[in-house]
Image (spheres, rainbow, N blue to C red):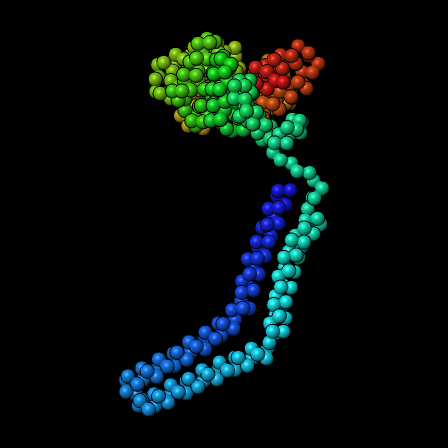
Length: 385
């Protein structure tokens, strides 16, 4: 209702903005004409005085000119008075009536026309849908931005809901809002306490927000995660990456080698670790043995040391794509599917990871134990229900 009142006021103001000057113009027309005539006669009198001062005319001629100008002024005034008297009050009343009619029609037809157009082309039967009401509706069928807004509103009213922050943080990451994700993880850690996953994910969000650079704050988060779970792979990976970025070669080599010591074979992060070692000019036992696909060959590792970062990432992606194609064409074991899932998690390809989880469930549907293993890994990667 308030919206309709506002629209009505705006419509009246828009009409008045045009009609008020129109009404004034009718009243001011005669006055403008009279002023124009007076200015003309004043100019003529001034011209006579200038000619007299310059000696162009005699005083007698100047006096005669002034008399003639005065006569014309009186005649013009008499004619205006006669015209005005002939028009009379009836003519003025008719003019005023016509003006009022135009104004009334404009004030009535403009809003009526707008309402008629809305009824013809709009949706008058649609009920109001304020944001607060939309956010209160069930989550089914809601878009992701609406769901996020719903949780954000809840957290604004209940900032101590640590579980809410913990749920919202990974959603922010999927939406590309890394800084917001880092802040949400920080709130969850403050309210729920630190654990390896929260600390690691917060550090990763800080790295993404910092364009891939492991900052001091991110490094501290990864170190806390390792302190809580010494064997955690992901925070150790980022800590090794931090040493590489800081040009601390010997420490970086030791960190990458320690990480590879826990590899079971075929993990995407292990391939990435080998490529980082190759970048540092170190050859591992796996590269010397030229392992079979999906791992890189010795020649690939040697070539990687000469590649730019984007090229190395492209090589990793190509190996992951090869494994994906093989599974799509020939199928594979639970371990193969889980290897691909871990690789996509490391690469941050969340949409593709969800697609692979669904494909793995379909491909392994005849093996309940394998399906259970895939679902368990999916939950560990943050994609389980």
